[in-house]
Length: 214
Ligand code: ADP
Ligand code: MG
Image (cartoon, rainbow, N blue to C red; front, side, top):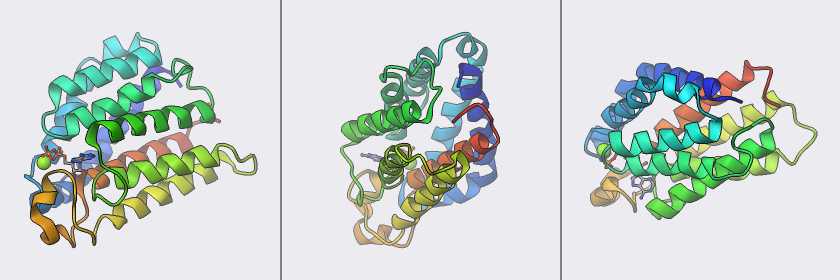
């Protein structure tokens, strides 16, 4: 994978995000302060504004630069959390190549670990971690298996992201803004979890159509 592919993926995510924006906005209006879509849009726009510069960097540098851009462009909880994801991914040796699925899985779990340290949320708190943690655990397991095709692995990751996202619906939130609502947050999917499911879904869909990633 190279920096151009990273940019291409962000463009795909932006498209998918626009198609789902009103649904996600409603979720943050229900259990947050309604700004989640604005935050996510602002972040993606800021990244794509420096597309040319990013394209000339090595992937690891691109990921770090994206992290810095998100820190300075997205407010709220999501900015530092998504920035941590990119920073954590860039920390892994080999992130400049990202040419095999084991490296990508290591990068993903390093990113998720840093988000976890930053936000101090775990599975069951009704946040994006309910998607990120199980997907990262499954990804690390699946790359050790030799009997799975790339597409089968991606399909399983998509299913796990969906499961994680849906698991946030009927629980109360114990982290983030939605935790102020107590039991009243029940019945609504967490907006950050929905965003992460959509992002993972879009990346997997993109990779299914690529030959280069094993
Ligand atoms: P804010 O909550 O500051 O308005 P956003 O609306 O952009 O920021 O993001 C809200 C999302 O952030 C939530 O739906 C949740 O998934 C995620 N979130 C909030 N707090 C945490 C946390 N401590 N750890 C992980 N994710 C969190
Ligand atoms: Mg919000």
